[in-house]
Amino acid sequence: MPPSSEGRTGAAVEAWEALFRVQSTLLRRFAEQDVWGGLSVREYDVLYTLSRSPQGRCRLGELSADVYLPQPSLSRLVDRLARQGLLTREADPADGRGVVVALTADGAALRREVGGRHAASIARELSVLDRDELAELTRLCAKVLPA
Image (cartoon, rainbow, N blue to C red; front, side, top):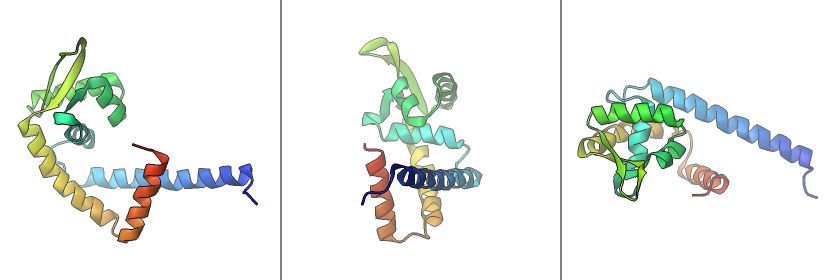
């Protein structure tokens, strides 16, 4: 017999709350760690997201959707990173009204350096899970949020 919608709703809410608490707690722990090389977590997130984009570049609007920051906040953050020489901001050649943001060599190098330390801290935080559990967690997350 299938579970009632009320029971399913309760289970879904419980799963969401557990996921949310884990994410919030881990993000707070990560932010407190001394791995960021002078970057904020949000700045690193922008560099990381660009590093996963084709040729290390994407439109500002696409970046905004991926880093979950409102456009005005992201624009200020991008300007800061550009002043530091970690990325460039240029007119979109396909649409002059748009802006393309691209990693510089220095930005890519800093992202790799910080990323290595951050990856080690992620591994430490998730060390309570074995390989199979990590694979299952990845599979479940991908099922909820397809690529």
